[in-house]
Image 1 (cartoon, rainbow, N blue to C red):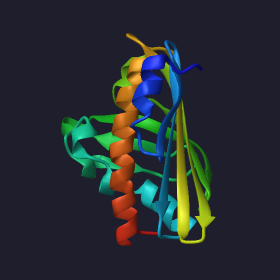
Image 2: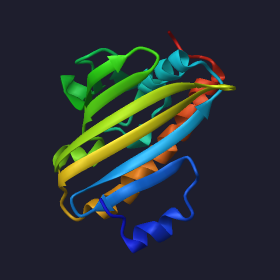
Image 3: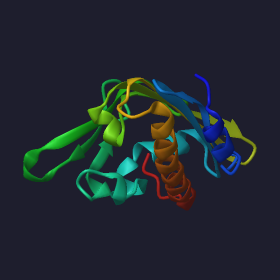
Image 4: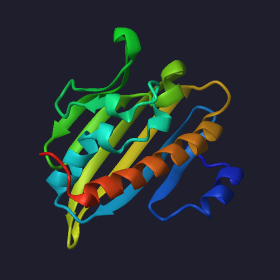
Length: 175
């Protein structure tokens, strides 16, 4: 994927931990890197407690506590809706405890597009704890433009990874 000039100019102001790797009319790739003062297993466990750190403003129900993520192959990143309904945001395709989770699906409005997404979350040990690298690749037919969608999704993920950093750093993670 090629990054357009407009996206490149916008990236100049992006924090070092967040970047649009590439974007074009058919898709995009985002990468977010966060350093955490906890071991890799605890960092990945924190990611799995999505209902504790994801913003309610980026849910269908308006309540982040209705989000859950089962860290196991076939596990659902799901959201309960009123009246017994629900949303499957992503599904776990691969899980290696304390190291890697790979999810497939479309977050937010991507659910309604003709796209396919893959998110891999890697936890590695650092001298001060761990680092999570979150890559999200989306391709297919996106109404409008993948380049424009990349910027919006990148901003949402940037906000969420900051929330994840705060949550994981508090040490309230359930193992």
